[in-house]
Length: 91
Image (cartoon, rainbow, N blue to C red; front, side, top):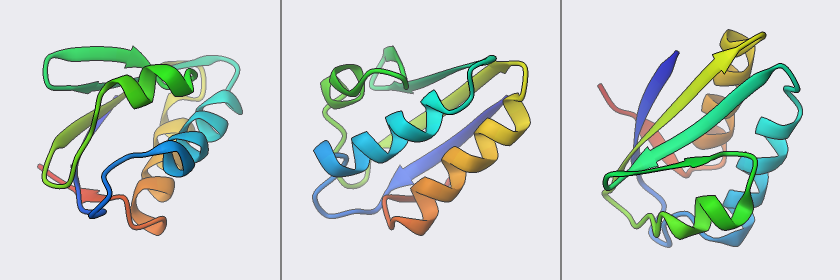
């Protein structure tokens, strides 16, 4: 399962929002969550991985979730992206 987002936060994805994404992804033990942007794919369970994407306002990020509970995990990650003002759903 995959959802794309356009980063809307003027500061991009920095330590605080990256931590929120990592904490949310880590709650879903049976699901593997990844973030892909600018030709690089990292696990969403690593704050250093997420920060290494260097996401800035206007960038497109794909959140990919596979495995058990993938739908619930993707919804939870979408909620973090939208409710924290990090990004908007991008088709």
